[in-house]
Image (cartoon, rainbow, N blue to C red; front, side):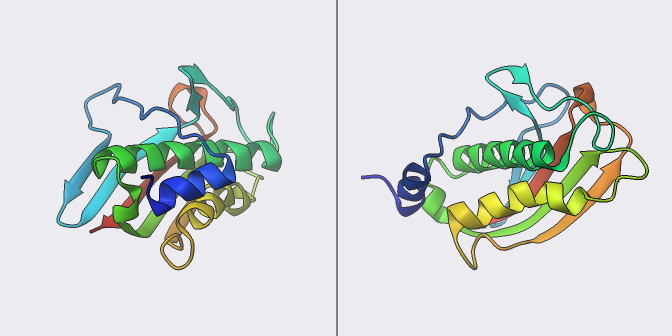
Length: 156
């Protein structure tokens, strides 16, 4: 029988992407105590990079929210792997760190990272999905992607 969170994913029509493997000298996540620290997740879907560029140059806020949501889906995939497939073990989304490739005059990074924040509340509900957060503008991100998000999750 599917758990509560798996049922919610189905109800929302969300299919999680396959958890990405590390492509450099790091691991996708680290568990210490009852916390899972998930490495930065980028905008890759089915092995293809999505949302390439910078906000305020060739991408807009709507693109950014979709990009951040995709990163959030990857975060959930990594967490699902970390807890042996049982997302009901997640007791809190503790913190998300959002990095947004943008032009110096672009200041809507928080709106973009809302794509991931909103997803966490949709999937895990309140208060579990509510979290602390940073939304930071940067000049460039790995492989030219426009958004990268990492996260800390608490589990039982």
